[in-house]
Length: 212
Image (cartoon, rainbow, N blue to C red; front, side, top):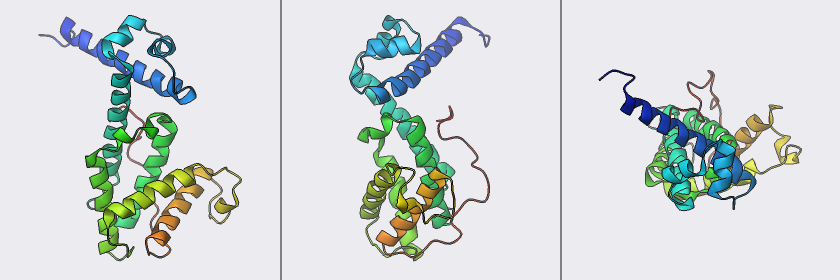
């Protein structure tokens, strides 16, 4: 059967439609968390029946948004090489990726279902490695992860003119927040001021791209 066979084209069309629905859902639900499937269909430029075929209910759509974000979290953990990279560098890279994901998943980032056991295990591994190398003194990786995620939310919500960001060496708001989060997390977990934790090369992939 050739590459352009009807079944393959139909499958590709279905995948494109699903991607359009999920992108529209992110935009619409970020503006109005109570928006209906019909509103999402209109934003996606698709027939409402198409959306209902892909997602039988609003809950099914939310599950799909959470699953997509979870895959991107896992991709980010892999890209940051939390298993093998120097843990301070991995922590900084993970933080960069999560801030990027917060921009392109403004609604799904609120869904706790995206933080699957696999994602949490990856973060716990990173904090265990930080402990083992002496970067932090806190013993329990799960507790460290909870502290990090709580601080992540608070730092992300800081206004651009916050005095808290003024101590950063960079004028870029996002970089200043990343720097603040890494420093604050390490300090809260019994570590010191990080050195050599920034990336010297651009990221190899976009966490908000299609490879997730």
